[in-house]
Image (cartoon, rainbow, N blue to C red; front, side, top):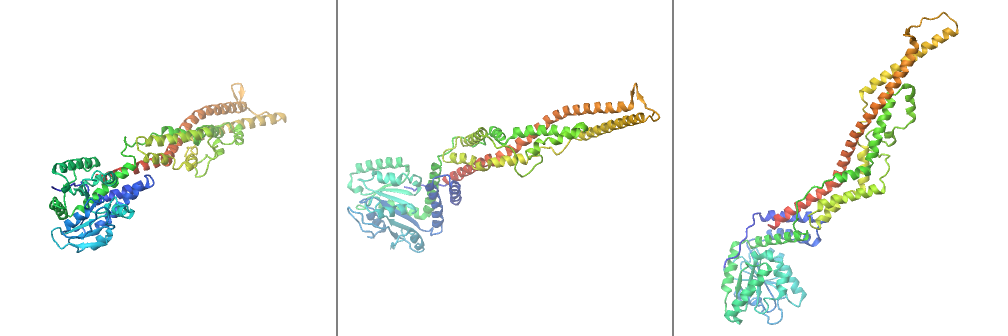
Length: 528
């Protein structure tokens, strides 16, 4: 009978690193016990790898009366362990050493104080442990079994025909060790008490139970310490195991895979769909409303018209614009700034819509992801919830709305208006001079005419009419320009709001999704 061999495509060191990384990533997301177990496996692996790898630690484990101690003595070739009848007698594990040199630190780490040297080269490198009974009435005995079952290199479960189907050993030990088939053997002891056909039936039934435990291919030996049946075969298996000197690494591989399985199971298993970045168009819209973007866009249009009139209006009346506040200055948005705006706070409906949009994005990102990672992804969407309103206000305040750059044609029109105004003043002055000359009955001054209308009147009235006409025309052009300016500012504002949504909502979601994806990659590497 040959021992099973399973080679992982990934080295043990890489699998352990992956398990440690997966456990670190699961911190705060997955329940503590699986994470602690994974860290414990990594720590135990580091400790075991630093101890003697020339020794293989094999533990005999079983129930009261299964004949562990008798088998222990048979393998050691001498009476080392005290054999009990109906009561558990082994309170502390004891070890038999076939080649003790260099085994001291390993046995100290295992905390096995009772050690017997076997003077034989037959199983050189073997450390055989006789464990307390796993069903002992003494709690300390059961705790000792649990402790050593978790750390020895190879497990030999010794069963007897009366108790081999006992649920205690199958449910408490064998089923949780389903990943450990490579480092598990089963002995059906005391077969000398059964007829040969009954032995075959017991072996078949035991194979069925082990298959149900997930240990379908583990070696099973019928043994009798009374007749010696099966003892040489067991020694041969142990000799092969010791010669390979790989049981310790196989055990650590199995522990690593089991801990990774436990982490994945605690994470809800594998996802049912691919991770996806949520569409945040609805989020951008809700945040824009809450940030007052429509109000700012309207203010931009009004400010553009206000400034156009102030820059190109009829000089006689444009000074009245000084008494009207600039819509953007009133909101503290006349230039990009790191300070706060004077925008009104979002009302309850806008806040509710914003919260609903944030939750919807988190839910979309978590769809298909098992709990508890889905909950973590949903929480990440609200990670910066308390600072979101300030961030939105800052995004609006820092937006370059392009209002500091005035169109060049405004200057041309402004120059034209002043020329017209100067022309009007020249015509008015000319008329005043003519009036004064006439009033003082001075010699009549020559006054040219444009047709039948004197030039002073033409200059005065014409400049006034043209100036007003230009002012009205530029108001129309300013209205058209204000719509274009509003569209551009809306684009800038919405882009800044979208960037804020990316930074404050989408980025935490993406970070958590990446963390989850990395966790899965590392856990699967450790498992497979």
